[in-house]
Length: 484
Image (tube, rainbow, N blue to C red; front, side):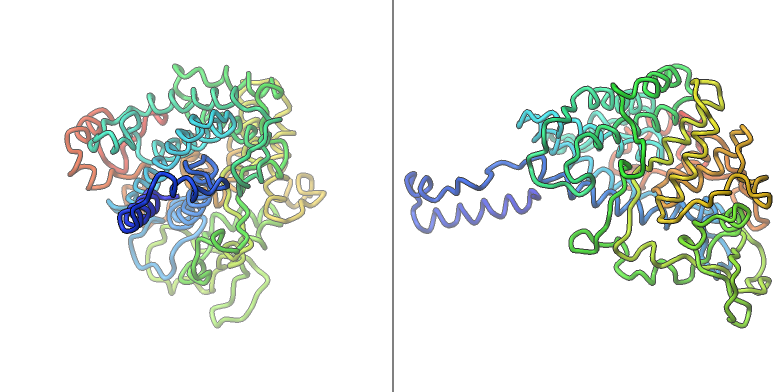
């Protein structure tokens, strides 16, 4: 329930009492015993899940697809994100949306604390860590300690360093895991992500824990690998995803208010084509996900083919150079019923594969890699061919070869349509190796962050200046702390 609605309701009651001389007895007689007079943590949970997941899915299409060569606008005469042109305002909606829902998560946590409900407390901590991780990975240093405190008259919050943000959210995930009581039900309504399955919420918490520990693993002071080994080696204490059914994937039913983020599904496919890099690898794999992700290409004169073919990102010159109509995006992806991926089971297996490949934990890296591929394929409703890893025509591309390059290429597909994760992981590893079109700008350098909104620079200038000085600039090429 929004504050505005609460306030409006109070005004109605106040006006009624003034008009009709309310008495103490009248108030007592007209109190509905079945009505909750305080906001519950369940009231806020579904709006947070839906709005965050829906926004992130739309941003995956609007930004990540272009910068990671999944798709590109077409025709595209010049400029554009696929040519590494990132506008000053590109991160504005991300900043504003995340802080709006951080405020709601804070209210949810306060309601859970008031109710003394440990499971809702743990869920709130998890949602907060998830949202702040996206925010800080997109911008770098961000307000945290003093954020969402307008009710305390703090309107110009200080920024926290990215290390401070990560230290806090990782500690919160540790706390969240310790709070869960899986035998205690969620009592404030039915939530839309897990249908009140507390055990799966705990798995999400710890799977997210692994993601974020890996994200900062270049920073020796975070001791990430030791903690990751502890999580992987102790599934009783730290349960993580073990199958697709446990993954954090929101099922969008199409029944209001759980509707597709696309008001018009046709907007997803109009003036958009699949990227050449994205399509070519799937062709090499003979991958069943192709039919789920893209449409067949056509000849120049519009005749149907049975070939998947994309357009190279960052191309130079006129569109007439392409003697075919490229594959488009599959409209079914954004037509309800559809899914919004928050975190997949496949990602967990690829994290394990990378840890094994680097010798950080003792487990079968090949098995984890193959499980990750299979999980990703099945997540999208396809069936993994029995000879996917052994077929003579694909084995050079799909059979496990023990390299990080191969793991990260398949992880790239596992992170498809998953907010900014492909971009974040590319920045962490430089993988997969993306071709550089002759028309790419920014010196052919992948942008690594959004600039802060101009409203932040204007309205919170002192703290903005300190953050910029700490980070070394407010530029799309200013690397964040965990990249260095």
